[in-house]
Amino acid sequence: MQNEQQVENQKLNLADKGIRFGHNLIDTIGFYFIVFLHALILDEWLGIMPEGGSNWFGIYFFFLYAMFHALFEYYFGKTPGKFLTKTKVVKKNGSKPTFINILGRNTARLIPFDPISYLFSDRGWHDQISDTCVVMDTKKK
Picture 1 (cartoon, one colour):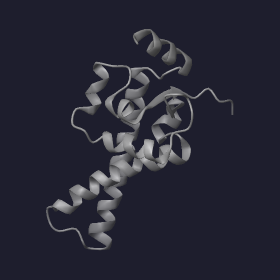
Picture 2 (tube, rainbow, N blue to C red):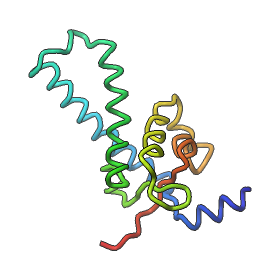
Picture 3 (spheres, rainbow, N blue to C red):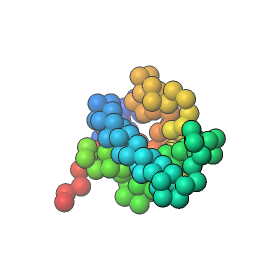
Picture 4 (cartoon, rainbow, N blue to C red):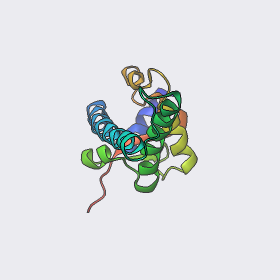
Protein backbone atom coordinates (compact mmCIF):
# COMPACT_ATOMS: atom_id res chain seq x y z
CA MET A 1 0.00 0.00 0.00
CA GLN A 2 2.76 2.48 0.93
CA ASN A 3 4.68 1.72 -2.30
CA GLU A 4 1.51 2.24 -4.38
CA GLN A 5 0.99 5.63 -2.74
CA GLN A 6 4.63 6.63 -3.36
CA VAL A 7 4.37 5.67 -7.06
CA GLU A 8 1.08 7.57 -7.40
CA ASN A 9 2.54 10.64 -5.65
CA GLN A 10 5.56 10.63 -7.97
CA LYS A 11 3.31 10.31 -11.02
CA LEU A 12 1.19 13.26 -9.91
CA ASN A 13 4.05 15.54 -8.73
CA LEU A 14 2.33 16.55 -5.49
CA ALA A 15 2.95 20.05 -4.19
CA ASP A 16 5.12 19.99 -1.10
CA LYS A 17 4.01 21.19 2.32
CA GLY A 18 5.85 24.52 2.05
CA ILE A 19 4.09 25.42 -1.19
CA ARG A 20 0.76 24.35 0.25
CA PHE A 21 1.38 26.50 3.33
CA GLY A 22 2.15 29.42 1.02
CA HIS A 23 -0.99 29.16 -1.06
CA ASN A 24 -3.06 28.63 2.10
CA LEU A 25 -1.62 31.84 3.58
CA ILE A 26 -2.37 33.79 0.37
CA ASP A 27 -5.90 32.36 0.17
CA THR A 28 -6.56 33.13 3.84
CA ILE A 29 -5.57 36.77 3.35
CA GLY A 30 -7.74 36.96 0.23
CA PHE A 31 -10.66 35.32 1.99
CA TYR A 32 -10.53 37.71 4.96
CA PHE A 33 -10.47 40.63 2.53
CA ILE A 34 -13.69 39.26 1.00
CA VAL A 35 -15.21 38.82 4.49
CA PHE A 36 -14.30 42.43 5.26
CA LEU A 37 -16.01 43.59 2.05
CA HIS A 38 -19.11 41.50 2.79
CA ALA A 39 -19.32 42.83 6.35
CA LEU A 40 -18.92 46.36 5.05
CA ILE A 41 -21.69 45.89 2.50
CA LEU A 42 -24.01 44.14 4.96
CA ASP A 43 -23.44 46.70 7.71
CA GLU A 44 -22.73 50.07 6.11
CA TRP A 45 -24.66 49.87 2.86
CA LEU A 46 -27.54 47.52 3.67
CA GLY A 47 -27.66 48.05 7.44
CA ILE A 48 -28.68 44.45 8.14
CA MET A 49 -25.83 43.38 10.40
CA PRO A 50 -26.76 43.78 14.08
CA GLU A 51 -24.40 45.47 16.52
CA GLY A 52 -21.78 42.95 17.64
CA GLY A 53 -22.62 40.47 14.86
CA SER A 54 -25.00 37.56 15.13
CA ASN A 55 -25.23 33.79 14.85
CA TRP A 56 -26.38 33.96 11.24
CA PHE A 57 -23.15 35.75 10.27
CA GLY A 58 -21.18 32.79 11.64
CA ILE A 59 -23.17 30.44 9.43
CA TYR A 60 -22.77 32.84 6.51
CA PHE A 61 -19.01 32.98 7.20
CA PHE A 62 -18.66 29.17 6.97
CA PHE A 63 -20.75 29.08 3.78
CA LEU A 64 -18.67 31.88 2.26
CA TYR A 65 -15.44 30.08 3.24
CA ALA A 66 -16.46 26.82 1.54
CA MET A 67 -17.81 28.58 -1.54
CA PHE A 68 -14.76 30.88 -1.93
CA HIS A 69 -12.53 27.85 -2.38
CA ALA A 70 -15.09 25.66 -4.16
CA LEU A 71 -15.97 28.12 -6.92
CA PHE A 72 -12.34 28.92 -7.71
CA GLU A 73 -11.30 25.25 -7.64
CA TYR A 74 -14.22 24.06 -9.71
CA TYR A 75 -14.04 26.69 -12.44
CA PHE A 76 -10.27 27.24 -12.58
CA GLY A 77 -8.82 24.19 -10.80
CA LYS A 78 -7.07 26.58 -8.45
CA THR A 79 -7.59 29.35 -5.93
CA PRO A 80 -5.77 32.71 -6.12
CA GLY A 81 -2.99 31.30 -3.93
CA LYS A 82 -2.66 28.26 -6.20
CA PHE A 83 -2.38 30.58 -9.23
CA LEU A 84 0.58 32.29 -7.55
CA THR A 85 2.25 29.06 -6.44
CA LYS A 86 1.56 27.34 -9.80
CA THR A 87 -0.40 24.46 -8.31
CA LYS A 88 -3.84 23.01 -9.04
CA VAL A 89 -6.39 20.57 -7.65
CA VAL A 90 -6.92 17.22 -9.38
CA LYS A 91 -8.56 13.93 -8.50
CA LYS A 92 -6.26 11.20 -7.20
CA ASN A 93 -6.09 9.71 -10.71
CA GLY A 94 -5.02 13.07 -12.20
CA SER A 95 -8.36 13.98 -13.82
CA LYS A 96 -10.44 17.11 -13.22
CA PRO A 97 -12.49 16.90 -10.00
CA THR A 98 -16.28 16.94 -10.16
CA PHE A 99 -18.24 19.62 -8.35
CA ILE A 100 -19.13 17.01 -5.69
CA ASN A 101 -15.40 16.31 -5.13
CA ILE A 102 -14.72 20.03 -4.81
CA LEU A 103 -17.71 20.66 -2.54
CA GLY A 104 -16.70 17.74 -0.30
CA ARG A 105 -13.11 18.95 -0.25
CA ASN A 106 -14.08 22.44 0.81
CA THR A 107 -16.69 21.39 3.32
CA ALA A 108 -14.08 19.11 4.90
CA ARG A 109 -11.83 22.15 5.37
CA LEU A 110 -14.20 23.12 8.18
CA ILE A 111 -13.23 20.04 10.23
CA PRO A 112 -11.38 21.23 13.33
CA PHE A 113 -7.64 20.57 13.10
CA ASP A 114 -7.77 19.93 9.32
CA PRO A 115 -4.83 22.33 8.77
CA ILE A 116 -2.59 20.33 11.09
CA SER A 117 -3.50 17.02 9.42
CA TYR A 118 -0.56 17.76 7.09
CA LEU A 119 1.83 17.09 9.95
CA PHE A 120 0.94 13.40 9.73
CA SER A 121 0.42 12.88 5.99
CA ASP A 122 1.32 14.19 2.51
CA ARG A 123 -2.37 14.79 1.90
CA GLY A 124 -4.51 16.53 4.49
CA TRP A 125 -7.92 15.32 5.58
CA HIS A 126 -9.77 17.48 3.06
CA ASP A 127 -7.69 15.88 0.28
CA GLN A 128 -8.20 12.35 1.56
CA ILE A 129 -11.95 12.73 2.14
CA SER A 130 -12.56 14.12 -1.34
CA ASP A 131 -10.06 11.89 -3.19
CA THR A 132 -8.21 14.94 -4.48
CA CYS A 133 -4.60 16.13 -4.56
CA VAL A 134 -2.82 19.43 -5.06
CA VAL A 135 -0.16 19.05 -7.74
CA MET A 136 2.33 21.30 -9.46
CA ASP A 137 0.77 22.83 -12.58
CA THR A 138 3.33 22.14 -15.29
CA LYS A 139 1.10 23.28 -18.16
CA LYS A 140 2.94 25.59 -20.57
CA LYS A 141 1.39 29.02 -21.04
